[in-house]
Figure 1 (cartoon, rainbow, N blue to C red):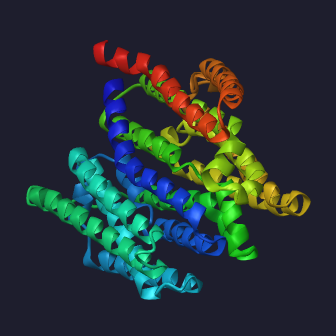
Figure 2 (cartoon, rainbow, N blue to C red):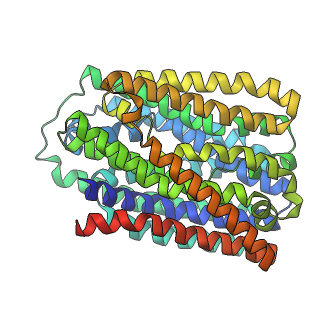
Figure 3 (cartoon, rainbow, N blue to C red):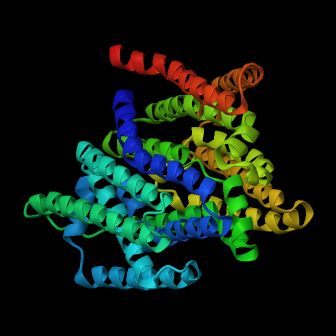
Length: 465
């Protein structure tokens, strides 16, 4: 069971991690070369795209990963034409809204609308192929897309194409990816369609879908609402500084998402008792902590070197923002909502999301007036911990087990102390023997080896145990 969980998590992480890795690379290159205003426009395109695609997908990806593929296909078989029409009409409207919102970037609204539709189609098709466990096919498509994505940005940075041509090239690439994934998804569906018996979606599942859609939207909104608000209030140049200081580490988000998806697939396809479910949660938390905690320790300890060395000294004002925002990273070591989603308690998840959002917005404005932009970062970090405690408490009540049985608390504490002390020692040693840039590179390389060494016993035991 644990080997299957590891395998699925690894595949899903790679499929979603390669594009994210290319985004990190090009973001660093763009930040170092572009004027802050143009960089701010570029980042605003992707922030708004993520939020609107979340709205347009209406919770379908979250619903799909919660249920067995057989059920999903029967529901698709019973889909009415009017439902598909309404879905298309909604997203046509959102595509136009996306183009209108970002008219100040100088990019054609029609081009931005096409970018939106391509991103939405790619997301839905990829989700279906993940459920079909077409992992190798997805890896090939993603690898080719990532290479082309990086190449287009390099052409832009070499002044071979302009900003509008960059967005046009990315739209074409994403459209090609969406087309390939759609063809593969439709083929996989129609190969089995004739043998499927149409089945209407039960009322309970429809309610779950509504709740999941609300949660999906609220999570994306929470992830970007600070940037949306700040982007409306300050100049693009100042927004670029805030964006760098509070930059999300997409690989960690994808890691947690991959682990959560794999865990939900495992729970949906395997009949297990509560003890087995708790064992899977503990195993997932222990494994994720061996990746997340070293990354957190490295990012916090080397925060000044990361901002000035990676993004440039002109972004030094982002250092305190970065120091605050990385404190939310340890929460990536646990899937706080997975068990609630499996138990179809999505309403509780949404209550926690609303509480989270209200606390964040309620704290953000007074802390902004008191501390400036760091106050906004503090507000959103603090409320993340409040939300995590709420979810743990609700899961504990539902399973009738104490919180200490849900999380590997003792092991977490030991791992955090060890990793943090190790990173402090590494920074002190490397800064005394090398330049700032080389010290950062050595610290990053050593952190990778530290993660590998921490995971080796788990991977080795599962392969040979």
